[in-house]
Image (cartoon, rainbow, N blue to C red):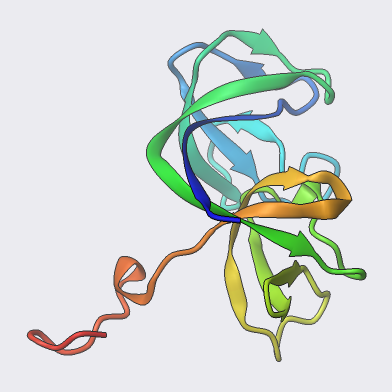
Length: 147
């Protein structure tokens, strides 16, 4: 499957989180019940800022909220591995290659190659992943050389 470009994202709004239209929106990467869910910006080292809320809403842990992304994301569909599958708690976090075109989130990533950041999970079938090339994340060679 090819790629698509998204400028908005629908994600579960964490229980009791208050989304205010136009306010910064983050994905909570804290291990626990709100991992992979939307929360307002706050002082927290586990929040990934992604955009602005397009609506005002109070979360109950099941309602989704729309977020207009700060930057459009080019995402690709990859099949979910049979084990260590990518799920909703992985939204905003990294996933890893399990095989050619297959992604997973293993407990021990020390021997794994990162595939990209999870943006959309399509159930057990797979996930839509944003892949950053080396030059996009600052891994360029010396000036005048290609990475």
